[in-house]
Amino acid sequence: MIRISKIISGLILLIVVSFFSSCKKPTSSATGWEYNNSKNGGFQVAPFEDQATGPGLILIEGGTFVQGRTEQDLKWEWDNIPRRVTVSSFYMDETEVKNLDYLEYLYWLGRVYGTDYPDVYKKALPDTLCWRNKLEYNEPLVQYYLRHPSYREYPVVGVSWNQAKDYCAWRTDRVNEKILIENGVLKWDPDQLNENNFNTFAYLSGQYEGVVNQDLVDLNPNGSGTRKVKLEDGIFLPEYRLPTESEWEFASLGLIGNTLYERIIERRIYPWNGHITRTDDRKAYGDFVANFKRGRGDNMGVAGNLNDAADISAPVYSYWPNDYGLYNMAGNVSEWVMDVYRPLTFEDASDFRSFRGNVYQTYKKDEEGAIAEKDSLGRIIMTDVNVKENLNRRNYRKADNINFLDGDAGSTTLGAWETLTDSNQTVNMYQYEKTSMVNDKARVYKGGSWKDRAYYMSPGVRRFLDENQSTDYIGFRCAMARLGSPVAKN
Image (cartoon, rainbow, N blue to C red):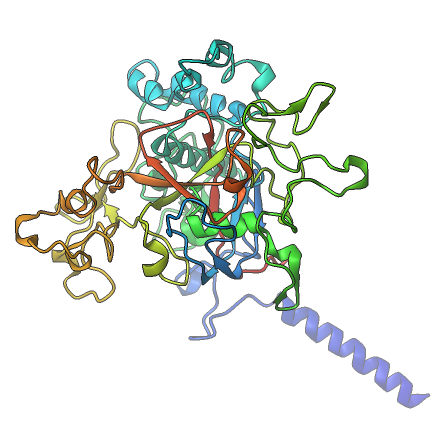
């Protein structure tokens, strides 16, 4: 009995010690100094568990896969040679960006910039005339597809690569602004106008004040007592952006639902198992699993039994999601990705986070080394890095690396490079507009669309279009980097 009471007493003591130990302030494992203590200098370490999932996004757990051709190369282009690569975990939109999403963007641009900078709004407008065809009657789509409520859940089209990129940047700022409001740092500010609007990088660089509700406590004994949110606080989300080609292809295949331990039990042609485009689900047996064109003159099937039930695009939540929970990764509309197109990219690119299109930039700074003022639209001015400031680097020197190993002087057999300049190397390499449509503005788009045959629904198929052009069958969805562990903690 005495022994049992001693054990219980020991357990109680252990619990008490553990409790008080857990209440102890966190300290540096390097110096032993307490964090968040104004008496010893006030170095602050914010509590942080895991990256939050941004609105509309799904976590795509990364890994290794065979990127490239999964279907026969019917066009004999040889631009998607299979190769094994690794994709880091990232986030991706559950659906394509909808007309309603894009109208929200246009409304904001009109409200903030419309009076003094109307060209900003006009520049963002989708090309609704992309629906016109000389031998089709598509005027109802020209007039109604973007703005009528009947189409608000349909994917936005007529958007160029550059317009999609600008939308991603805008979305980043709106999401981070709302995060600051929800955390009590800023108040709602419906009166933002011209350069006086929230921009994430402008805020972080001290170029934007906003309508402050309550700044964070500053434990620096030499400070003012309050401070702005910093990147180290873990409050802001990373930028929304277009996915890279390898990310898009990895997410589209959805092999996470097709693995047994480390073994992929069936290599997919499409984002689902098998080689057919119909479902074996008993409730919808024989229905198409994506929106595509079955054959000449057959966009949706026979009246009374419409198969994919979509003569053009379909609402973004149509059909079955893949194993990541992503909708319409095959069919509906093709989608822009970040990459610049080169036919030999798959032979040259890295096997880790492969991407072609890097143009390295930095903040524009004044003579004293401080970040320069914002531009007239409230954005931090960026400038290309230069060779002079990177002379001691081994990984890169110049800003523009689009042509590395495919378009630069070291990758051609043309000779006579002494007559070429940086501005026309790609033109000479690919004889742009003479023998090729490839240049530094050729951007990759992936996936099939309502206008395509089943062949283009294979995630490995590659196509390209000028970054300033748009069509009635190309849309986009956004992605975001996953920071820290590739596996979610909860």
